[in-house]
Amino acid sequence: MEDKSILRNKSFQFALRIIKLSKYLQEQHKEYILSKQILRSGTSVGALVREAQYAQSKADFLHKLTIALKEANETEYWLLLLFESEYIDDKMFNSINPDIKELLKLLISSTKTVKNQ
Image (cartoon, rainbow, N blue to C red; front, side, top):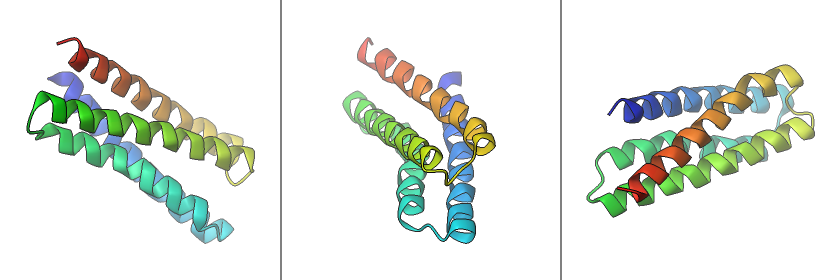
């Protein structure tokens, strides 16, 4: 039960950081395409975790968590792309990258647990 709460809270806090990152990209760099991509994938992780909370079945729960995992993986891609293209600097990347890594680990662990039940 505690793991679900941790995942829920961490994915929500991560979404807030992604919203701020998207605003920064738009306001400071006038970058609208990548910022919208990362905003969509980064905020959907938490939304899917919330959806999974009230899943209709174990299969539905697993399906939603699996999609959240895919969205987290996509978000990691956008973060790397923003970093490598120098839209975000080392400090910003090193600040947010551990968060997406942790979410990925939590989601992988959660999906494995559900599959093994």
